[in-house]
Length: 323
Image 1 (cartoon, rainbow, N blue to C red):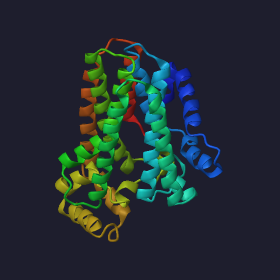
Image 2 (tube, rainbow, N blue to C red; image 1 turned 30 degrees about the vertical axis):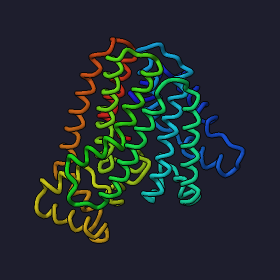
Image 3 (cartoon, rainbow, N blue to C red; image 1 turned 180 degrees about the vertical axis):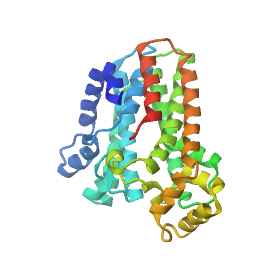
């Protein structure tokens, strides 16, 4: 089962959100219209809007309010991707050229800023809900996670604790916030709001761990970007950390040399092969499954509805996904 099949129950609402995304970033400026639509037209998993809708189903489910939250969250996510591609010097995203590659870095940075401004505009229409404060806090923490990643580029001393703290800020918090805000604007009872928010956090952690494995195990056609691109850019993830601590002396020295030279020494292909056979892939996936088990425990606290089943299927998809 793929995500589209899982999303089938919310197909109509998601189509409306897709149209609302296009409307939110519409501008009469020709270049900005093209650049801001570039990533939107490439599609995406739309997990954050789906989490908003599913979380809202445990309350009053005011779709107009949920749509505003969903659009704002997805636009924030899109803006960070455009900025990330500049920082990472990435040429492809979702199987097509990035904004910075199609145009240039300056255009990409201002495009990301514009999309972020559109997200903030969406939030102004949400009335009295304390959504803005919660989302602003999540965005601050996301930025801290991104800065931490930059500080740790090509680091040979990154600990498991620091890595997990980084991906919590970088990925998990926005997924947790998606669930939380969907619950908040739908007046979901506090106990259920806490449960669905925790679900979003644990799923977000598992998602990023799985994503870091896919960077080593996936293929470019499926991923939409070259395999091994994280390490090539200096982003040290858990499979690398495991190999540095548990791999053979040969493996450890090869990775040390690569990191210390900032990718100038050693064959990336050979190092990727070493990491794949070091046990780090299995270790990372095991940890991902443990986070997902916690997510499943959170779901048990929610009413047994079709929406809860969808949340469970999304979690199961994340563990077995190839993109």
